[in-house]
View 1 (cartoon, one colour):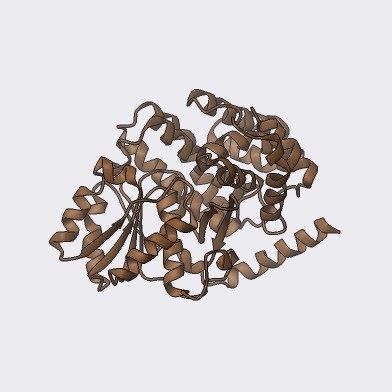
View 2: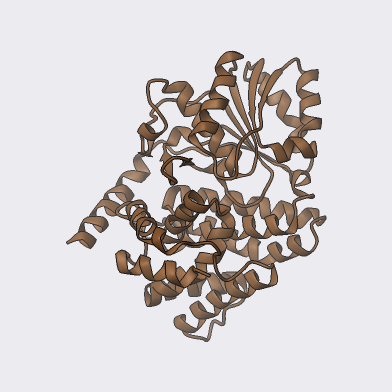
Length: 399
């Protein structure tokens, strides 16, 4: 009965989805595209803007050129750089205070998925001051247009510059959850590969595998469309052709640009078709142990795909062919298993561990319960997991 309820819930969402006012951010891409952003901000009528980033970005001086250009355009900026890897409610409230105090008119997210999620949370609080972040947890609780939101990803992974979601951590309860609303889609996204050239190899690897997870989970789920399947396939092709090259040779500008585009396409895919059990488990690891999201996804992905069994053989076989590692003459099972094997191999070559260290046995029941609550009934996964499935998977990924 429970499985039937979940499938009916998912089917309803799939039927309603085409009727929703989907939009994509205005895309500015290519080398030096960041230089165009101050003019775009100016044209929107903004003279005071909040920049949400993290201390790593500011300490490396990655924004220095942008800040100089903003000054030249007489745009005042106020920087919040205390965002942590799994952004918290406190991060959002602190950044909101900076926004309000300085009478800002727009928000610029500069960084990986964490600053972008934090910025989205700030925007939601600006237009919904009567609602707390926990009160906006779940689907369609914002329902008001955000101030102009500009997203500048410095990694190639989260795809948050294209998505409807902001993933937030409650530091007190260690719960990590999503706020999902069409109004959270950024208005502008800047894909400038020059920003990513100095990205360390381990972050390149983890964020790239994050993008791969998005593309795969969007593709194997039951709420795909012709459009999202194309987004996913194009993203998988780009990742298999470019991720290891960017890991080995971070100065390869073309590969960096291709990975940015892959992450963006994967974001477009999963924001319409959703993710799955990999993300549900990864979010608990982020909430409990602050495991970086991309790293968690990379480790968990092959275990979950294997646990799905034959329910994912056909779509994974299609992705194997798209990635150039499949054999058209082989069976779906053979190609699917080859694809899973290629994920393990890619992880190994990039130094990503096979297991997650630090998981405490006593935490597993609560994490499994929260992962199930996140996944069901929303995520249109190939196979609906129960509590025993989740408990088994936590044991499999535990070092």
